[in-house]
Image 1 (cartoon, helix red, strand yellow):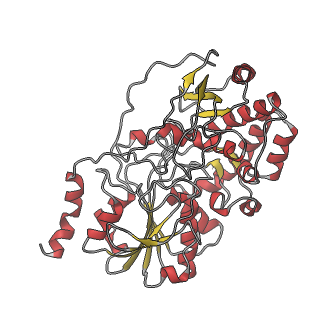
Image 2: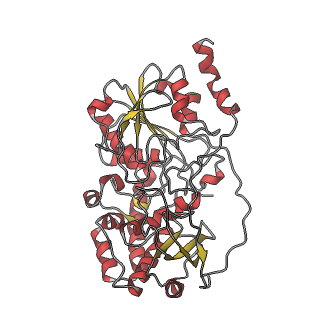
Image 3: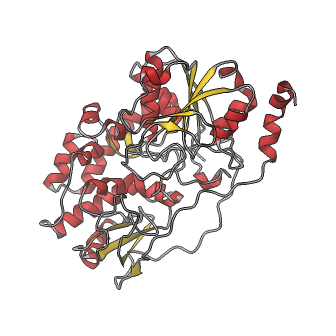
Length: 443
């Protein structure tokens, strides 16, 4: 088939492809058992599936009308398994076949180019088995592309599905790649995707000095813990506000509105990392991630990571009783026990131990406040177990966003007062963020 005719047919082929099944996750060896404590509130009735509207990811918009950004250029692609079309086709494979795209190099983030690698595991560079292209690891010896890695690349393209939480590394892999491209005078293109947990922001705004308190890859530029931005919007914000100087072009996702949840987009869900197995997990992660710097577990090694708060020593019934005073919206809490299990080498707190836990079940995701809910639970767990509860590393300070917030938590200040100050900081920050919004807001 002539190359010119093939390029004209790309959009038609995308629309005709049959839906592909999302990546599956291994099931755990142990299922939580419900305890005897009463739930915090009555569970809401099962809701009808949300209405969906068709959203085109930036990947498909590029092929539809923005190929001039990459045509006749040697393309480097920073991506992973989450970069899919509406029909579930891999962006890597699609761009590799496209006759007007000369894909020459791939760059993989945490969890690997094709996904499935456990969090925190360092990854070596190599070759992609499907395309044969070189794969430069951005979660191994370096987290930012080196000049050598960018040699022979005319344009650097980024496409990954972020989950809207500051410590989730994909968005900062993007920022570091943008900086590297700017330093080499290489244009940088972001193929945008929806923020799966909407454009709503919550929690602590990180101060710039916190970048080096923890790992930069988990907090590289100032945004709230739940930042409410797409990767493309973060790129615009960082590039302009912090003087990166990249020749940036963002290809927006067509048809998305910032109040839409991912399951309202008709896009296929694929686990962006091994322990984010659902939209609910993506939402709870933006708060529960705080606990990953403590000696509590969020359910790694169970059937539903990011659903639990637990430890072998936790008095769950007393915890639920103490939390009632806060009238937490949009969530039901009950007690369970489980024994975490999982593959060797995976980070699984309390592996093989009997864990007592509180299970979080979202009853109203629009009302639910994942960061505030987690802050309340941590505050009351420390009050209940002052000898057992421990903060393990400075990553906690980075996630809390500032030294004042960490100190306020350490002093035992009322979480409602801490959250009120966070809200004040975010009101000021949102005025800056809104300059870089790409999508309509509000109902």
